[in-house]
Image (cartoon, rainbow, N blue to C red; front, side, top):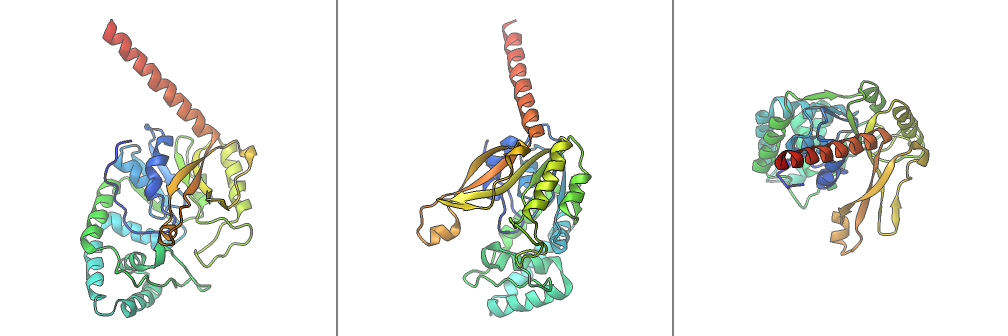
Amino acid sequence: MEKIFIPHPFPYQGSKRNIAAQILPYIPKDTYRVIEPFCGTGAISIACAAYGISRQFILNDLNQPLIALWQTILENPEQLATEYQSLWFLQQNNSKEFFLKIRDQFNQTHQPHHFLYLLARIVKGSVRYNSNGEFNQSADNRRLGMKPDLMRKNILSVSHMMKNKTSLLSLDFSEVIAQSTDTDIIYLDPPYQGTSGKRDQRYLEGLSFNDFVDVLYEMKLKNKMFLISYDGMTGNKVHGKKLPENLKLKHFYINAGKSSQDILLGRKNVTFESLYLSEALQDKLLLSKHIAKQDQNDQKELRFA
């Protein structure tokens, strides 16, 4: 796949921006709509839009301020970029104190430009909330966040590609999937694997392994086409449980490279992330490959006729 500029609107831990090019070949080129029930940065949808793979998108996330930020990116990108620029320059004298001030304001008002600034400054782009639902992640005080000119370029590029093509929702992922059709491609990238419970300080709400698998069984029965990023491994360390074999998913690993933390510590371990394909999507890809091969044969016959 030819490499092109793929903008990213904000940093976010777990974003698939760096491996999107390895995931896109498993999304049929004639896809009309891509759905991301756990959208985050919407990295796969953005990459699809950049390569012209899909014409419509649904971005969903339970984190309502995140969806509000997405709405502002799509509808008021210039204003958002200008507001971010103002905050970025205002922090210069005392960035640590300024970050805490903006964090307090965000927890009171949930303004999108405040959230964007916080995402640009926090440690590893890792969103954290306390038990009261308040944003409580600390700043990475070694840096001031993405420079305003690059932020503006990314925001305007994403808005240009996605505006009027994207629907935004803030529902439970199962509700979004229930609204999907058999022709949609659904990309699932859950926030974390939890074996029990619904609460985790890293997110507004967690997701248990069993609840997730139950929905996947329903999707399988309804012949939905979907991809899942879920578990993985770094060196000999395995991250999370693999999904059940009786879901009949095609499983393989994607090379995600070295984590920033491993690089800082001088480690050589490479992270591999799992990708799972549903049976319906496997069938669709095989059909698409067969059609493409048939088209090539037809073209050869025309040339030699």
